[in-house]
Amino acid sequence: MEWTDEGIVLGVRRHGEGNAIVELLTRQRGRHLGMVRGGGSRRLAPVLQPGNSVSATWRARLDEHMGNYALEASVVRAGLLMEAPHAAFGFTHMAQLLHLLPERDPHEELFLTLGAILDAFGEADSAGMLVARFELAMLSELGFGLELETCAATGRRDDLIYVSPKSGRAVCREAGAPYKDRLFPLPPFLRTGAPPAMDDVESALAITGHFLLVRALEPRGLGFSEARAAFIASWRRSADHQRL
Image 1 (cartoon, rainbow, N blue to C red):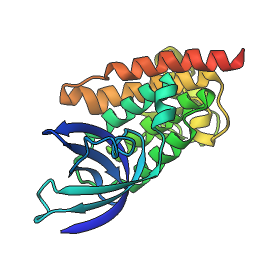
Image 2 (image 1 turned 180 degrees about the vertical axis):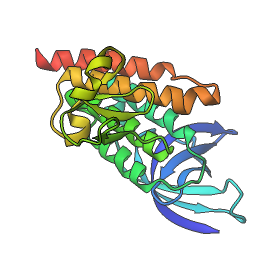
Image 3 (image 1 turned 45 degrees about the vertical axis):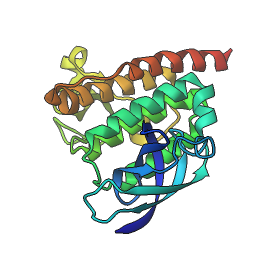
Image 4 (image 1 turned 180 degrees about the horizontal axis):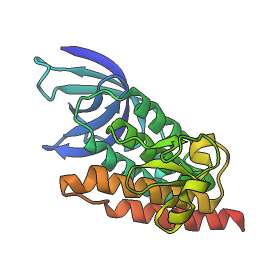
């Protein structure tokens, strides 16, 4: 068995004295493990860094085996992720969320989304928005996508300013007014792509965080890792610093 694909390094662990087991998010084959012989060497260390994009060739006798990787770096991002704390914590959080997906289950759109986010992650102003969009994409890939195009109560497509914490559907101003204290504010950028204010990003992260917890994590007996809270705190500090 042999295939070649694009991949993003999610994690690396040593195996024996000189080898490494590498986890990639691949474009066509989803989250996929493989062994890199000599992966503990200085020569390969710069390639096998989380966040890097690689060209991966995988070989194994049978498809169900772990197999071996031959990897070549295509985009090196590890330096950026190490220099910017918000980027390091954000990538760790996103990589952990990807473990909610079955191994070897293809999610090409999520692969493309993650790559685009990592390429833009150095700008602290946009990092919070990017993570919110990734979490929204994760909900969709897990089958829990939010419905933000029409009002849950009236079917209207305009004046949508709330999200129901129960249904995950948008609610218009008129229908939501009596219950506004129990609804999430709907940040316009989640629907229109307009540049968000910082408060809008905070609102978006509250929405995506809520639904990831109640629909994906808590039913599995899980919660968010510390990386998400560390990302949000670091992003706030970095974004505030850039505005000074």
